[in-house]
Length: 148
Image (cartoon, rainbow, N blue to C red; front, side, top):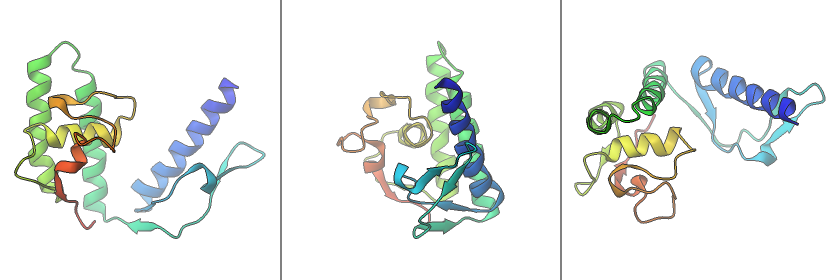
């Protein structure tokens, strides 16, 4: 069972990595009903009704953001450094085209990045919450996402 799970995770990671970072598009509806597991353990994606092309610059920015989330996760025990690091993501998010409401907290961009790219996290900084239905979800402080 663990071997199957690891192979499935590896196949999904490779498929979505190639799709987004090499081919420049993503499948915007990747629920389990749109993912078939083939007899050899590889996967087949179906229902490409919701997709989006992404240019090279934006793909590079998304990759950089994911690396920054990983870097943040290595800052255990360095609270002040981690807090400043999260706040620095605000400028990075603005460079990507994300606009925040005036009421957004100083760590909103960082909390949003963690919410998007670290699903293991239940608590987010500055009172933000990972539950997308919560009034304290960081996405509620986003005025607009980039058209990319």
